[in-house]
Image 1 (tube, rainbow, N blue to C red):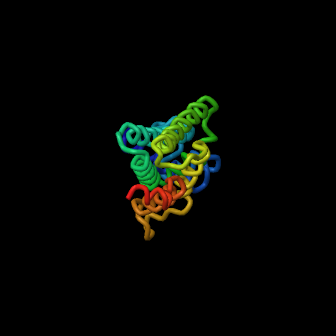
Image 2: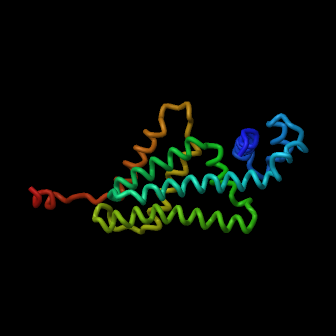
Image 3: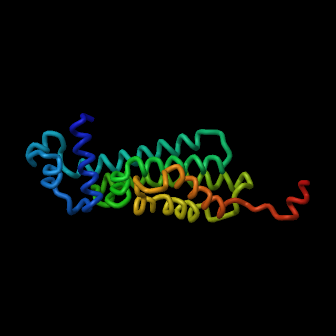
Length: 199
């Protein structure tokens, strides 16, 4: 992707984030990019291309992240920590694109929407594998794996609603706090009797 096309993409992501995909026009994007609307078409086919590229670019980042985590031979708690860290880093490093990814994918064409949902489900499956592994290892409580995964991802994704890059909390601190919060709900507690028996 050329530097100019990347610049246009980032401008579109900001406008889609601020105004919504439906309300942001090619004229708006051209004005923000300081070009005539007709000139914009020398770089892109239309705003649909910008939405499509954003959604699938972010999906690829998330999938690469969860695949890397699940390829590493760690226990489930360590994998969960890495998965949370990776997710938060992607969100906070690509905040506008993340908002578009989460909110505006519904405007994709029917065919591309189906492909996008398939990728999103694959990502969720990567988290379900971690939760199920923790249960199998005896680290996590017996929980509804699908529900636990959706609750976890909802907590992670909500960050885009309140994260402030100039705020007091760094992404690493946010990731650590969320991980500890989630782990509190998932991790098995050793009973006093169990502790006594190990001593």
